[in-house]
Amino acid sequence: MQNIDIQKMASEAKFNSFHAKVLAWCMVIIILDGYDISVAGAALPSIMEQMGVSASTAGFMASSALFGMMIGAVFFGSLADKIGRRLTIAICVFLFSAFTAAAGLTKDPVTFSILRFLAGLGIGGVMPNVVAQMTEYSPKKVRNVMTSLMFSGYAVGGILAAVLGKQFIAEYGWQAVFYAAGIPIVLLPFILKSMPESLGYLEKKNQQEELKKLAQQISPQLALDHDVKFVNETHISGKKASIGLLFSDGRAFSTLMFWLAFFTCLFMVYALSTWLTKLMAMSGYSLGSALTFVIALNVGAIVGAVGGGWLADRFNIKWVLVIMYALGSVFLYLMTQPMPVNMLYFIIAVVGACSTGAQIVAYSYCGQFYPSIIRSTGIGMASGVGRLGAIGAPLLIGLIVSLNLPIQQNFIVIALAGLIGAVALSLIDHKRSALV
Image 1 (cartoon, rainbow, N blue to C red):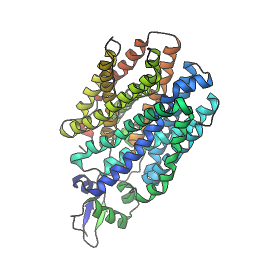
Image 2 (cartoon, helix red, strand yellow):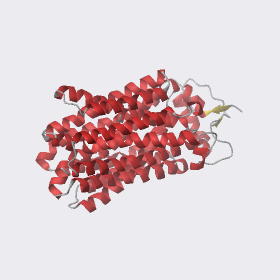
Image 3 (tube, rainbow, N blue to C red):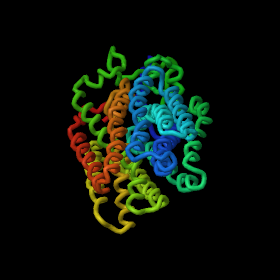
Image 4 (cartoon, rainbow, N blue to C red):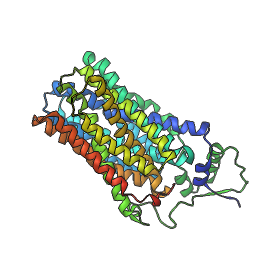
């Protein structure tokens, strides 16, 4: 009987139309996810004005979705290892689309926060699963580029939220951009039909015929015997997926460092995505100009994600990330200095590259670090713990705003997070990476 290591085969395959289809689906899902994350920040000044809420209350409203994302990342990251990634991803898309649209119907901050929490379950749950999916199916030579390119869709979603906000909020109200989030529900049947299932999940369930069909798409030139059997040598023998395995085989300290790095970077990302529009408006810029800064932040994120992924495929991904986190901290501090507006656009774009862009590359690194049996669990736990930083960011920045402290204080606090993250990444034991 011919035995083939399914993960090794996928890693050694050459990029083809099948990989392009997986990339396209994952990228579309992340664009939708990014839109749902960013839409509240784009609409925040209008929501505060219409509902008559303070900055600290607005910070709590924004954090409600992030709290849901923390729970969703942990729960759905683990669930996917049990019921499969395809169904889990579809459930998450339904949650964030339906409940973000429903939030547009609310009139008070409490109901808004509850619905955004429910949407956050899906927003957070989809991330570890699409990262694990992209990591598993990507050829090794282009794995970081493919994962980073996919996750640049997050920034595209942020740009889409800012552009629609500029076009529609002033004329139709903030609700319009929330209603638009419900449209992706129509994609669910296509996701369930076209998205391939996790290779590791299929092998664990011994679905050999399905694996054979996928193998012929992944590597068409591969000669398969009639009685071929697909195995997964990266499985941890005799053990089921569990959180405890994240701390086995010398991974414990590195797992904690991943959690700290995700915490600090997501603190940066969500402090900026939630409050940048409001902070720039407080600095004297119009709502339209303030939203343009958000566009610059997300354009920089795309460049940082794709460029960081390209560098990670050619150099040591760990040190590429350390440098990106550190540069993000430096450029956040530079935002506190007086400068022409065009220079400020450039600085904000670099911050986007080294915060959101760096986080995207960090997802790729985390996906490569763990064996396939605990890949979704590992990414989900890092994302879930990281959400504590995401939850705290809008609250802390909202508190600083409500105290009428200098705006520069906000950017210094965010910069400090990036510096801590760089140190945490530098301490990860790179030799433990499963796919390096």
